[in-house]
Image (cartoon, rainbow, N blue to C red; front, side):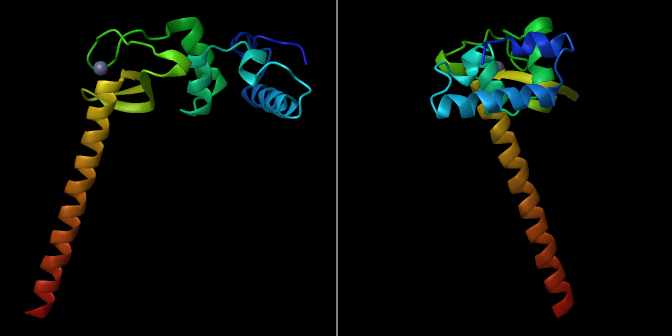
Length: 146
Ligand SMILES: [Zn+2]
């Protein structure tokens, strides 16, 4: 298997998302059995950040190619601070779609501080919804018992 620039090929519509996925899976397999000496990431010519977006955040090749060639964000979409990219694709979080200040943003890259806040809001909303549900049930029970 010769190294290729998968995202470049996807961006230029020479590969579909599924074809790209199959190729990277084949590279994984080949690397696993020792037929390929480079990693699947190296085979695909993807950076650690791009590969993290693929394997950890489940973005499509098409979306990652778009990020690479059009607007890979270096600032957090929430707080506008520069994102400090860590080694091996760390230091940031990506939401495939996220409501930020009333606007639905696709592939929203955020800093870890904001990721914590967003996760906190999500958990808070869940807790409030749970409380409401619990209250309703209590009220219902009270109503039934009267
Ligand atoms: Zn932020």
